[in-house]
Image: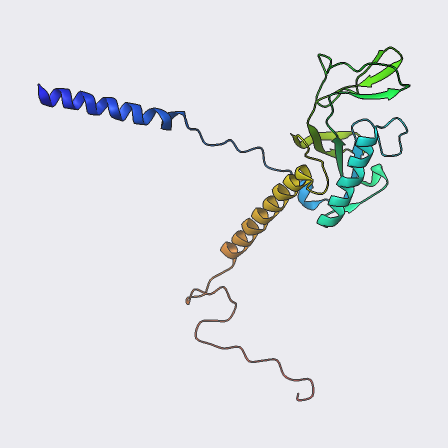
Amino acid sequence: MISLCKAMVLGGVLVVLALPMAGQTKPKKGPPLPELFLNATYVYVEAYDGNEYDPRLLPEDRKAIADVADAVRTWGRYHLTLRREEAEIVIQVRKGRIASATGRVGGSIGTVPDGVQIPPSSRTETSTNVGMGVEAGPPNDLLSVYGLDPKGNLLGPYWRKSKKGGLNSPSMELVKKFKEEVEATAAAAQAKKKAASSASAPANSNGTNSGTPAGTTQNPPPHPNHP
């Protein structure tokens, strides 16, 4: 009877210890980055609401375009282009804000309206209150990366992250995250390619991947002055 009680107590302890482990799941990996990110050369940076020359663009977004362009230039993997149609990758940015006012002084700014999309459906959602335009949206900074089809339409996004202050210079955490994932994917692809190349090369009896038969040496080519 005592042994049975001890067994029941021990079993209960094991169940309790197993519960936290059962609740732990491995973090899900995101989808692999497309080869476009590894093979592309030219990138174009814009805001969700337009390019940096759009007079309706908010100053925060215009500065984000410049800061992201500087970060990409420092990275050195891609070349920036001023022509959208020449780009293979389009990076869209948007600074987070609860509300940003434009127009004449005298209005009041409300909270974020319901139904604001991430990213916005077209331009920043705007409402008017006492003569002042109010632009509202998600509070986190957003960075999305797209491809372009032959007609110039966006494809994707293939990569998107948001973070409060993620586009603040000089840290530029969202660009840093994108860079880390691209470089990690490139390194993995290079290692895979190298492993496949080594596996396909014919091996000699001495275990080397060389065209020289085992136990022999190659004579150096004759010097041009000594035929």
